[in-house]
Amino acid sequence: MIPLVIADTGGLLRALARTTAGKPSFPDYQRVMVSASAVIVPGLVLAEVDYFVRSERAAMRTLLSEVFDSASRYEYEPPVPSDMTRAMELDERFSQLGLGLVDSMVAAVAERRRVYRVLTIDRRDFGAIRVGPRLTQALELLP
Image 1 (cartoon, rainbow, N blue to C red):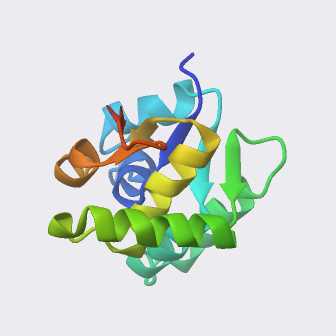
Image 2: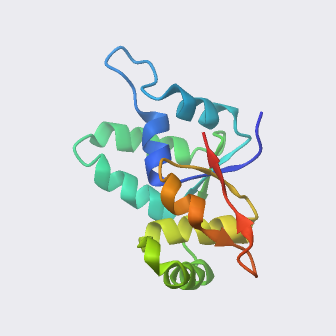
């Protein structure tokens, strides 16, 4: 089992994707999800996932029921003002990346929770971001 992981939108979508036969489309991503002690899902990530699966309402309803099931390994992380402020600071500091609010929020939550493992497909941006008081902490990108 691996410790806590924070899910970014692309990583979460890949982890949940299934083939027509019902098998994981991206087994490496799905493996991270099932082997993590818990998967932190920032609220803005959930909103962005909803945008991408807007034509698959049943899938979104299933995801929501799992995220908010206290017996699941998901931990919903609602946006709080301090995270929003820090996200905007990180977005400005790494402006050359064009992070945007959702990716900046993932980094802010990682920093506050001190969970530096991120399930993501966005290796370019999350590989360049540094968090922590002196912006020296790199994020570990999974898978």
